[in-house]
Image 1 (cartoon, rainbow, N blue to C red):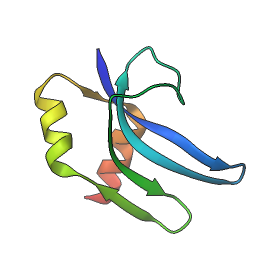
Image 2 (tube, rainbow, N blue to C red):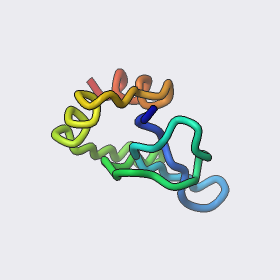
Image 3 (tube, rainbow, N blue to C red):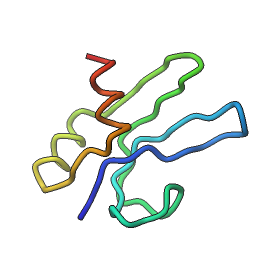
Length: 75
């Protein structure tokens, strides 16, 4: 089963996150299928490819809890 997850990047105390589609059982920083966008919590910069997100959701991918919360804040 595929999930839309947050993929950590950056140094300690300077984390940024990629929003990716990955296998549900994969590691947090493991392999992923597709890259949908990014979120920087320090600058509140958020970018997401809506077309890719809808494509993956239509094909059975599910949102992880962190991504659900992030999307709810952005709307």
